[in-house]
Image (tube, rainbow, N blue to C red; front, side, top):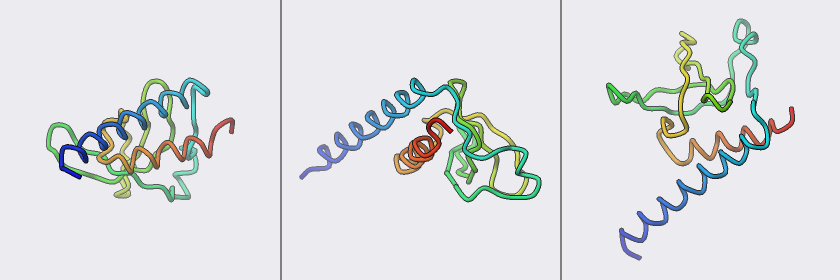
Length: 109
């Protein structure tokens, strides 16, 4: 196999994951992964990595909710600073797959 083949396969996988994400949102308009009210006394177990478009820094976040408007997350550094992300803001295909898995778990919940 060549590097070009690997790149094509990765591009296809990224496209398939994005399509699956969209399909999940078409089935259900809102996915609650972790209730914001519970942040006062608990911390989510799930982590994703995202990249700051301006600085290029990568940081860990906890996903809270997914809607058509974006992915609501809080920073995992204890500050619980909120961000609204796009799927493409997640740093890896693995993180995007993990988010889709969390959405599937919470389908119709």
